[in-house]
Image (cartoon, rainbow, N blue to C red; front, side, top):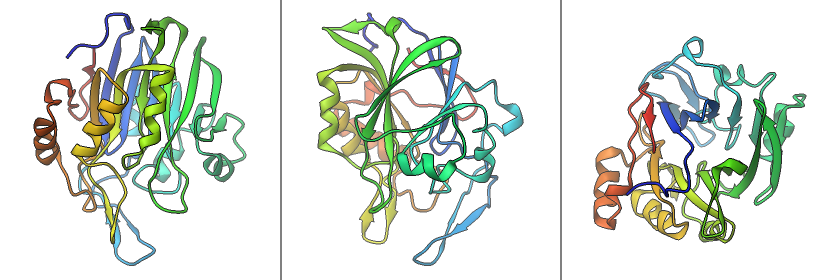
Length: 263
């Protein structure tokens, strides 16, 4: 399925690893959930054991193009933000949770947003409207997704064309509200069916398909489904779920390190 003809902006994504990707919209670059640690890096878990990454990032920090802004779903989990990723924050616009903004202070360019809160910000000379979306991830921890819109994105059936980045979340029924205001041309979703003991903390393929239909998106870009032991669905399992749900033709898979034109 193609993106609605009223959305004419060129959207390119380059997957770096986990939930880290360069999202380029007509030459303006957003980076999602910055993680750049090498394969074999590990972090202890509060309940015992460790998180360990098994793959190197497709790009290192010194190989990145200019980054204009960062979309940070949460700052307190190392697989979404590591120490290397933090080096990108100074002097750049960073959008995250209220707790995240407090924990990253003092950085005046970091903006913390509550669920459904909107902010209008000039990035590289262009006005963007950023709307925070709810996430259900780890109990007691803040997490947020984002809707990106600019005036020249146009509209479809009276609703603003936009790009959605889910952040880390399971299926949340309330997210369907975004269709009241936005037509989602591109939905970028953190998947993998990540698990904690007794708790699912990111979407599986079936939940992603359910949300995709709820928000009436044109295409779905999966991320966050490889390189970690707590991810229980990889591309093979996700593809099977998408096939069963009838949305496989709407999927845009990313290849690590290779720019992919989404539309």
